Image (cartoon, rainbow, N blue to C red; front, top):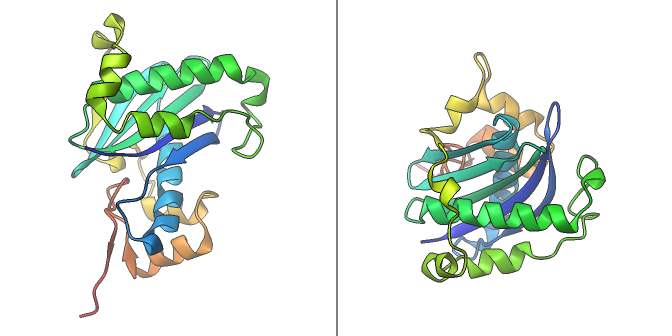
Length: 206
């Protein structure tokens, strides 16, 4: 069981703004980590943008799941994990982080904030502590109302896209992806078929 990223974002009228994020990419090759991190940021922002206020959802793709919670005050959180990690614990973590974040960071800073300007340092410790879901769930019991909350399950990232939208176009327009990551995606030297229905692997020469 593994958690790969934990992000806090603000859902604006047209796009999601990344406020803070933590990553654990130790299980991947060093040369893959930079592009993987960019694609996880891109994925998290896209999921928040397409999620309604007050909703919880899980986006499933092969052995990976992206769990999202967007509050009614536009503050959102995303956890990216493998499919073995308990979804219930992921939503417990999102509840805890967003509640803590909203107490420590003034809401007037959310719309224009960035990872460099937001003063909130707990994400890395939360991501590390919750790598063990049994220990984390014992310390932070899931609230009863969460068990009764409907969590929407999307089988692929494509189901979040509007009619006529293409993932390729969103990748090229993304502000979260560098030129190198876009080039890898475009030329298929690296195929990202992981957190977006594009799990990452190196395309071997034929």
